[in-house]
Amino acid sequence: MAGIFRKQRDRRQDAVAVRFEAVGLRYGSGPEIFTDIDFSLPSGSFHFLTGASGAGKSSLLSLLYLAQRPTRGSITLFGQEVTSVHRQELPAVRRRIGVVFQDFRLLDHLSALDNVALPLRVAGVSEEEIRRHVPELLSWVGLREQMNARPPTLSGGQKQRIAIARAVISRPDLLLADEPTGNVDDRIATRLLHLFIELNKLGTTVLIATHSEGLIQRFRFPRLHLDGGGLAIVDPVTEEVRALVGAESTPIGREPRP
Ligand SMILES: Nc1ncnc2c1ncn2[C@@H]1O[C@H](COP(=O)(O)OP(=O)(O)OP(=O)(O)O)[C@@H](O)[C@H]1O
Ligand SMILES: [Mg+2]
Image 1 (cartoon, rainbow, N blue to C red):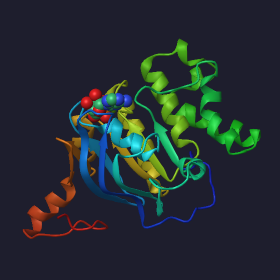
Image 2: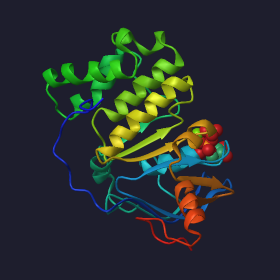
Image 3: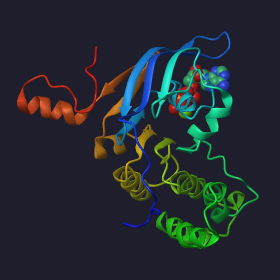
């Protein structure tokens, strides 16, 4: 699978991709969804995002892809404070983020191939390069036969894989995926996780919201867990290491927790 992603010049990366400081969110006059959330994601890290249905996973992701602003607090992406910047500056930040939406958000009048090619066309990539890379990625996610099909004629799991291919094709600096394996079987889910891991190896910071205990147990990445308006970082690997060495240790690349 090496070479599945386009080669490109490595962009300058800040040490921290995402930083939330005392972030609060409420919709209208409803209850607070988040209360004073603090966390940071080092560049190149890989985390799951977990929590019960309604805990706020999609809401947290929407703050990250700048679909909405927090009610209070500060969010920094790639070293830039985004809650106070001018709207005109947001598209440049957004272009560095790939998103797999829980409801896919594909363009129904375009083929699978054209949906996936869209971010490359927007970025001015040549048609020759698009013809080389998009079919390869679609084949990799098991959609070789469906390349020319339009989303309304495809199954939920097939649409989900188009949405994933579209999110990763431009090798974003930050990949946000909302239940990206919610509609596929275990075998395809594992394959998709490996795609995210390959992207992560190339430097992309990855955050995946999931309900799947199977994936969490199998891949054992640290997770951000939402509960009751707060967020906790659960790090199974560190917990294992801690049990082995029998001592307190600070997770590598992360600030000590309060
Ligand atoms: N646009 C909105 N307007 C008002 N309330 C909203 C809006 N979006 C989400 N909420 C509320 O915010 C809370 C968190 O919703 P969110 O969709 O972020 O949860 P989730 O963890 O993604 O759930 P699921 O696992 O079911 O996808 C819920 O109580 C929901 O009703
Ligand atoms: Mg959700």
